[in-house]
Length: 259
Length: 259
Image 1: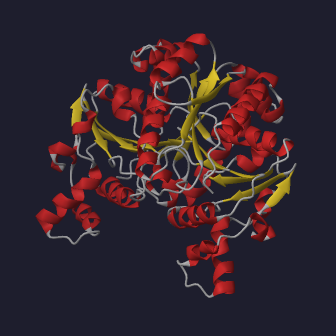
Image 2: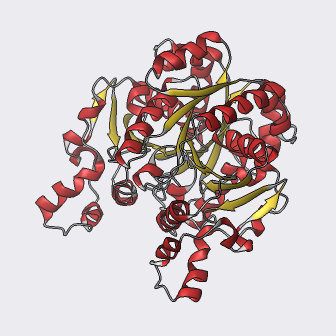
C-alpha cells in the first residue's frame, strides 16, 4: 500500500505519518517512510539518531546514470524497471525502530533553485516501486498544494488530507481534492486533527460533507509540552495513539490495492 | 519599505500580514499586500469580497510582452525599468479598506506544473518596484523554505520569520536564516506567535538567542472561535491587535531602507 499524507502547513502531517509508520511496523508491516518536504522534520520526529547520513533520493540520479548510462535528467526512466523494495540501495534508507526512512532532497543553498528535479525523481520512484502485500510506503508531503501541480504523489493508493478545526485548513482540503482529481487520484480521505470538543468535530464533518473521514485525533496539550521539553511527542499521549490506531484500521478496511 | 513574512506552515503568517497591512494603512501608508503562497488565503483573511477577480502577477507576463515585445520567459526584464506603484496596471491590484492586494499566481490544474515562473516574475517585481517613503509592500510567503531556494524575496528590506512555541518552527527559522544569508538577505527578525505564557516566551528567546525579536503575540482562543463562527479573526482579539501594533513600531524603529 502506498499512502501520501497531505494538508495545510501546521495541521499535523508529520506526527500522523510518524505514528502511522510506527503502528504499521508494530503490526508486522515493512514500512518505508518518505519525507517529501524540503523543510523536513520527519527524521527528527521519528527519533532517527543521524538523519544527516541518509543520502536523499534526489542523489540516486548520479548512481542510476553510473549504472545504466541514462543521461542527466532522464534518470527517472530507470524506475520503469519496477524495482522492488529490496533493490533500493542501502545508503538511501536508514532504518530505526523497524521503519526505513528515505528523504526526497537535501536543503540547498539559498537561491540555488527549486525542488522540481527532486519531485520528479520521487514521483518516478513511488510510481514504479513494486510492493509486496506486507510492505507499505508512507509519504509526508510538503505543506500546501504545489506538490499536486507537480503530481508527486499521483501513484499512491490513498491520499490522506489532514485538517484541523479551521476554515483555512478546510479550504486547503478542497483545493487538494480538486487538484488530486486532475491527476486521476480519486481515493482520498480526511483525518480531523487537534479536535478539542464535539462542536469542532461537527464543524469539520459539516464543512466536508462529501469526504470520507478516517478518524479524528483529539487535541492534547501534552504533545505540545513534550515537544518543548525535548521529549518525543510520539509517546506523550495515549489518547492520540489510540485515535491513530483507529485510523490505521480504517486505512486497512478501505484498502484498494492498485500497485 | 518592503517586508516579507515567512515561517513554517501554520505559525500564523497570514494573520500577521493582514494585521500589519491594516495598521500600516490606518497609519497613513499606502499598502500593497502580496499573497505569494499558491495555497492562498490572504484575500479571504483581509475580507476582500471578490478575490477571484484579481488578475495574478504571473499573468502580467502576457501584458508586458504585448507592450514591450519581450519574448516569452523574458518578461521579468521589463521590471528593470523600475516601475512605480502607480504604474502597476489596475487589474492586478484590488483595493479594499485602504489595502491594495496582489496575488502571485492562480491555482493551476493538478499535474500542470510548479510555481517557478510565478516566483521569477514576483521576484523581478519586488526587486525593481520603486517605493515612495510612505509606501510599503508586505509579502505573505509560502510555508517552509522552497521560496528561498528560488530567492523570491531576496530584495526585501526586512525578512520577518514567524515562530510559535514548537521545536519544529524554530528549526525552520534557522533554515530560513541560513538560506536567506545565502541570497544576501541579512536584515532578518523574528516574531513569536501563539505564546501562551512566560515559559513559552522564554523557550523561544532561549532557542533563538542570536535573533532580533520584533515582538510576541499571545495565543488567544477567541481568534480560533471567530474563525469557526465565520467571523473575521482580525477584529476578534484586542490583545493580539495591540501586540501587532508594537511589532509595527519595532519595524519602523529598525527600518533600513535600501530601495
